[in-house]
Image (cartoon, rainbow, N blue to C red; front, top):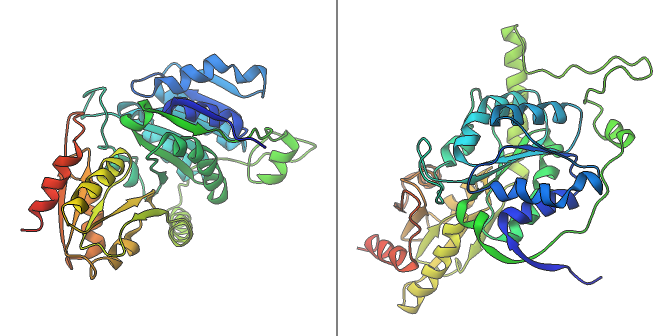
Length: 359
């Protein structure tokens, strides 16, 4: 079967992939630079073809609680936003995680704090990878660096969310959301029937059917000993995810004296910087975390005895660099290079920063 190759923005790829993977519902609210997700869904009108519900909610808070309800009934539901909007969704995300429910969240990051700028950023690493909302929980966090991965990570995000009954998030930056590239769209999958949902998600609540009492979906537990038991169960689930779902990419690392660690658009810029540095005789490799959580800490730790230094490049003041430093545990020098306020660096700037750690 011939592949369907199209040219589109990363945000548009998210929308097309959601329809094609059989998503049941999208609930969102427009905010730059991710508004094309909702706009594309509205233009495609999947409710007329696949039956997928698409709704612009009255607010980000309303949108995430609609996702909560849909997830509680076992449906493949998702939302998207950008940094300030994700901040508003944090309480609902914590409720969903605390209720052992699957859903997909998309965050196309912009600069902050506050309303900040509509230009790209990677400054939501802390609020996403470190939990964001209250309580000891994790999101499965996927960081795409291409339009193709924006499309591919929709089905992967749903797959992981349902496998572990845990929210998954696609953490993209404004560069990836707005850039246009060729993309191979996934084939259409039919939406699950209600009978299939009930068989696949026996934990979900459907109301009283055939005399069966509905399951109760809640994150509330008033007895501390039971709440502790719930939290210990969560931690065991997170250990399973860390053991099984770490994803990363290594480029030219075999002979590297220095390592660039970057995700998203900065990994693409870092790859060009790596090529420029190698032209100057500097042996540089790049390690790209694809899952920001679970973080590839053991892989990075393995390079601590192999390289002379690491440069973590981010569109922020230094967030992922903390996890890299924890991973190497002081065995090798780790420096940070970042630009703020929506400024995207040139590869030459990264090469110069790399040279500084060689001194």
